[in-house]
Length: 194
Length: 340
Ligand SMILES: Cc1cc2nc3c(=O)[nH]c(=O)nc-3n(C[C@H](O)[C@H](O)[C@H](O)COP(=O)(O)OP(=O)(O)OC[C@H]3O[C@@H](n4cnc5c(N)ncnc54)[C@H](O)[C@@H]3O)c2cc1C
Ligand code: SF4
Ligand code: FES
Ligand code: FES
Image (cartoon, rainbow over all chains, first blue to last red; front, side):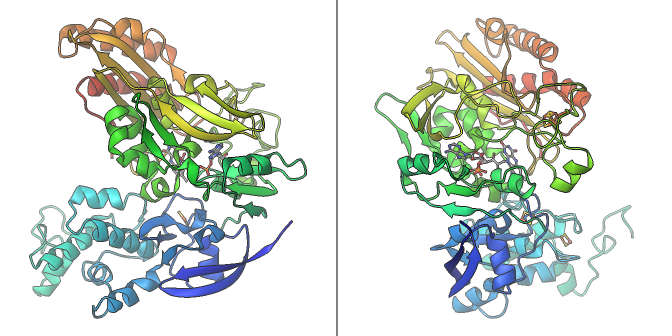
């Protein structure tokens, strides 16, 4: 018995109806039915976190979630962060997206959608996380480019700006916005000159 | 891109309905809980059922309760994240809370369940691979082939039990309640395992794990879990060690247990650990000596194979290290023992 199902999903606040067979994952429905290609198909087996989306506010891997089991749940993808922020009365991109940009928290960008959704979920439950809490929350999101430091700093930048203070550790944004190059030399780190 | 093979999804609302779906002679059916073990395996072509029976809607499998006699019961569908964070689990079964907190990564702990972890398929570096990869090597005994790549000439699969909760539950003398076509039965977690990497459980494929029950522990109960893995953020164990110490009113160890995982097809109890630890006093030299003796004994008895990734010689050298650290952590009421 091979059947196509009609699924009613709530994605980024929109009610959508799609047809998909039972063996399709949420990631496949998002990318190939709804055209929401922000969620990345990386390893497709649970290792990398590039396909992370929020289901009822919690980060899950859409490559291992059966699409049919997402019915009745609230799905948020990277495409939904900015509209949700605007709907809450904010302007422009979600502060996480803004901070990732300003803090140089990305290179190739492949990990970013998942990374930013894990970060958003963390900040929603813990607005002022410690460095260790940030590391724990992002432990399921692999980045092959950045070395993670700027990513952790970006999350700290969001928390600091929400509190109206400077982040404990200067970030790329700190240097850029002071008109300096955010290179090791500008940071005064010895022996690391590029 | 890894596609799932085709199947039909069923969503029963009760355990009895799930059991009936599994018993259908016309359609091969498998249970799926969080799917974090089964779906990657299916994407690798390791299972191709006609039907997946999701336990998602079976509410009776979700409760965590402590009954009047002090038994802690955890429904099979309780997520790993909920188990690790539950104060009752942390207080009554610290080794379990610690072990579960170190399983995979955050998203997978939100999805994966305790029942799925107990029922985890055994793992091997020659098996947990894509169909193409396995075919290139001529497959192996556990799936599609006739030889074992770990034990040359071996006739028995030695893929490793790799579920972190298993040694913790064994150290706590936990019970499991299962329901099948013949009704419900209870068995000790100790008796759940077979020394066969192809299917390492004494449960029938038509049985549903309903819940895990942890008996009340001694007043001076202390437990800890130690885990060696490649990346501290996400990987399966290269070695897992659960320790229990029951410290009596007199400050001496009255009872103890030590169980390891990621070695052979079933979790392994370190024989002789109890005898060496009983009577020793944490904080005194006698305890330190007993711990060293147990670490030496474990080093002799536990022999990692080239089944899971990680050099077996290195894993063997880590056995006494993790045994020692985990016992010392348990004595101090600390743990888990791991690295980031
Ligand atoms: C990248 C990655 C890292 C991982 N790291 C770890 C790790 O470090 N340690 C670890 O232990 N695991 C690890 N896992 C495996 C997995 O996430 C966990 O073991 C999880 O607990 C499995 O639970 P689940 O609900 O997702 O199981 P599922 O995948 O749904 O099921 C697993 C098996 O159990 C059976 N089953 C499920 N529920 C029941 C039930 N109630 N009764 C009878 N049978 C049942 C299924 O049929 C299936 O055979 C990892 C997985 C990935 C992808
Ligand atoms: S131990 Fe590994 S290689 Fe040998 S039969 Fe089992 S899965 Fe295959
Ligand atoms: S694509 Fe889902 S975890 Fe890698
Ligand atoms: S920016 Fe390339 S993987 Fe993270």
